[in-house]
Image (cartoon, rainbow over all chains, first blue to last red; front, side, top):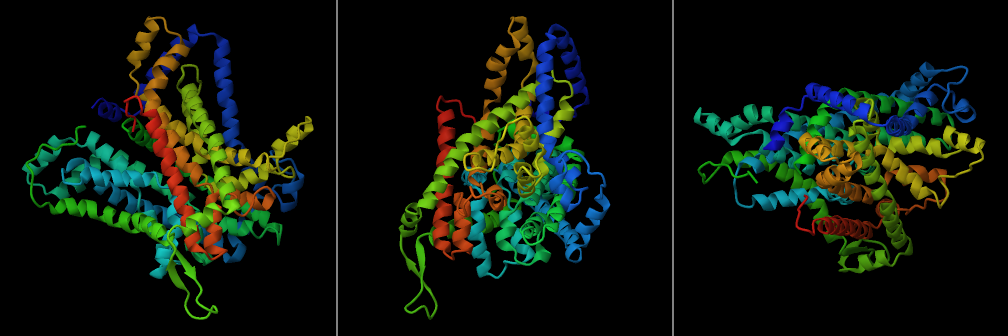
Length: 308
Length: 303
């Protein structure tokens, strides 16, 4: 219950201004030295986390030759970012755009369905008393502990026997299952959907599904966003599943496509530049998404972590 | 637990089925079924009949695939390597994530929000691409870091056989430290500030507040992060696969997952691969549950 109120009052503005006042009053008392140490470490960590991204953004402006004989953290004399982008998007008849679209399709559709069915199941586990409820929940929770790589290989042979391998479905369908999503949804439904509200809606004549669809889902919105984002990133970053399932390049997501190009660098060093520029484009895409959705992430994880 | 709804029980609730069945069916088909399939398949072996003509048949061999896997030196080595990797990666990850979370939440941090986003960004970079990028930063021809170190007389080779596990651990750390840090920051934020005020009035130093209040109260989340990291290390597949062309220190069955993948698709022995996958899963469960039991021993359940 304490958690719920904290969760509700999350919108950060007020809180962080409190933080700032607190921080300022403390900074006066504290020795300047420790402040320099703390912020120095934070800056160093920032450089560490940015290093590969800065490197790839700079490298994406170079010719394949300059990639290997100019200093990695500075631009070459004749940057050619545009030319590299054109190369990436025209190579193999523009297959790179297809890979991006495939990644978006797998991640968005998979994450959306995962969100809907996990939310429904988590809500039911939270708000209905039925026999076997705790057993079911334990089994689902156990699923969180199973490494995804253990599933991928046998799943290939299963889906192969029904002729689904090589199709979009082979990647999409397994991506729709998120045990962690059910776990998050149950915790959120417990905390954010009061029994009284359900009771009142029922007295007003709303059916169970209507209560879930138009009342509970709204109260669980932060959890839904979290489940969606978490699953979106998981699918977008997934490599093994598409690797074992797909065989035609037109169905590849971006991760698989870039490693395909990477495997051709031996044959033709030009592919180095395609891999670098392609990596830069795909990194930018997700970084933009993550930064713009960052405040939603914060809300979600709070609940997931502190109520565990 | 406040789970019990105070409604009169009803005998048949179609809504309950409508809500739970989609997930339960998908979970059964794409999660439980592969696990069962792997376990069953690991007990069989495909034998080519007679002269190699005719359809190969499945023969029940019970635990033969397991003994075969565990008597393959390269597979046992890969298990040992995975264990060693976990010993490097798990403490590195937990200490880094916790350290960054405590520093960012300390009163002395200047731009906590900015740094929080910055550290989280790598989580959005797919593991494959992270490995590709770090691959360039691990070879002297393209790495400004190695060039810089060489200029001051330090020659290190991250892709040498002694350094390659650390090189891989670094990629995983880079990708997931920020995500784990966010989980820990959320836990730190949930601590009521009155506790700090009370402690300060009692004359507690920042260090003792960290040790005696913050750390004990974020313990459940630290455990969560540790278990996630243990599971994550068992998945080790992509990084060695991508770095492999760059170094001779990575064999084709460097990790159990790579070995299983090879058995399935290169060697054409999916039953042996299934046994290998089951072994990894069992080790994962033993580790995760063992760790949970260890930390929950004193009666304070965390998860």
